[in-house]
Length: 481
Image (tube, rainbow, N blue to C red; front, side):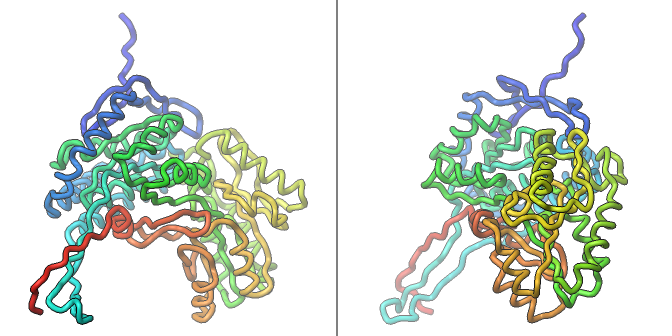
């Protein structure tokens, strides 16, 4: 009798589980063992998913707000009930330490809860038009209407919550959504599909299609998907814009986020601990992980050793170990790239104060200083556990160094000086400035996005809902106010 071989985990086509034409292996980043295989849909299945989304769009747009809100509450509640299972899934496919996977699940629970709350209150408004003579007796009703079905392209680093940040706002406004998860980490999105299928949402409202990246072009170009929400690399993001110039594209791209230590900041131990943690959490694979550390010269000699000690105390290893804080990178190619960039900087005169070596997919938490301004460690997003330290002569020099990049997502400024805080908000070319903490802070309900090469549009539940909709105006005539 042949050995039993389980079928791949199904994809979700118009809300229904289906096997695909091919299977995709999901490997554990830490040791390369097979975690699961998933069904890769064929062209016919992709076509049926898109056709269903287009067909249900008008019906879903008119679905009462309370129905959409109750479905989102149900998803939030189920995620909380299955939190342990989902966290283990995230760690298995992504390699992030379990402690960070658990936090990601709790954030996704909140993301769907916020979306449920916003679905009930997201509305337009009345505008009186008699503010000039020609508008006497007229009033405008302004409504937010979905632009149409959303193509949601998600990255590997937050395989659940960044999917949630696309799915939840789309469902909240009444827009069907087709999710293309990262090929390396499709399991969390497929698990979310199971949970969505348990709701009373109309058939065809969602699909989860783990197609390979090279096969995504048809979805990007399909005119029935007028909105693209993309999180990922800068190169891929701008290529999507070029491939679909007439679509509404929301993009959260990369960054090389800076944390600035100002001369008035006295608790250097706290700053060192926060920067060490959030430069290395998830092995640095976060768009707002600290990469560049800009320290005022007056405190540099005291701060840098504290930072090195804090980074050196971080435990690396198997991400399923609850004590581990820094796990592997997503694959060996990326780990090798990080190691090479550190070596390139060292060859150009940088000093490696700690780490820099690789074992398989794991890179030691690394601190580098005296990095040339044209080195990749400074100019590009390393997406690995590396901190680059530079010294600044005053706050304005620190701001100039922080702005010396093509990116602009978020920055952290350690200061208690209110004037400096407002100067930072005015001077730093980023989408968000975090005062008194690292740039890695993100609340899931706040606007989140970047400037320059870090993208267009904003995530954050309500902000995404605004991006997924357009204002339509109805003018009433003969109105007495």
